[in-house]
Amino acid sequence: MQELVERLRAARSVLVLTGSGISAESGLPTFRGVNGLWRTHRVEELASPQGFARDPQLVWTWYNERNAVHRRAQPNPGHYALASLEERYRDFTLATQNVDSLHLRAGSRNVLELHGALRTARCTGCDERIPIDSSGLALDRIEHTCGGRIRPDIVWFGESLPRNAWESACAAADRAEVIVVVGTSAVVYPAAALATRGRAFVAEVNPEETAISDRVDCVVRGTSAQTLPELIDRL
Ligand code: OAD
Image (tube, rainbow, N blue to C red; front, side, top):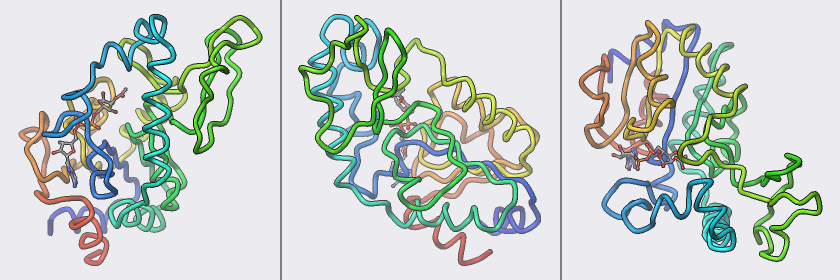
């Protein structure tokens, strides 16, 4: 961790990329771990435009349940540590693959939500955005007055990332002197490509080995809620 501390002390531009592992200690499941969501649920039914076209009620029932679970969850010390890290830099970007809003709730400001967020929905026809509260979307509201359907504002498999968020994240990766990759298996592209696209010093914070472990400059093997506060203390 010492080398990462020194790099962060010297850096003026920092990018952090997070995945579902950072919310594990808030009680939210990851996707590919032992109890991961994609071990017990069918991705193609729940996270693809084809699945939504076939059974929108099933898709909304699942996202409504996840939304309720996210709302009950609280940010953990890992989220708060990243919010406090942001305070140290003028140029700090947090690109997340998570849709749980926990970074925003912890106080992070410059957050790019690469895979969308569960707090809004949007219409497949007119693109109107609708806020989603803790009770989710009522199943009798899926059909929109314009003839389209209200869908979760989430990036599904086979879909492009939101253009602005993606372009900002690429620019941040190119500017960054340090990139910290936290709690992601780094197998889902294009998000994973951010980690290694620039010339930055790249550190991985993860209790397990990942697809990019052998390409990063430094590995912090531990959970994010344990190691990130320690990192901040040492800066
Ligand atoms: P994965 O489930 O693929 O990976 C979770 C990572 O978190 C693993 O590398 C774990 O080792 C790590 N991890 C587990 N507990 C941790 C902890 N306490 N602290 C730090 N790390 C921990 O989840 P993602 O990489 O987020 O996309 O998956 C990427 C995308 O795939 C998701 O955004 C989602 C999914 O399909 C969409 O839904 C579009």
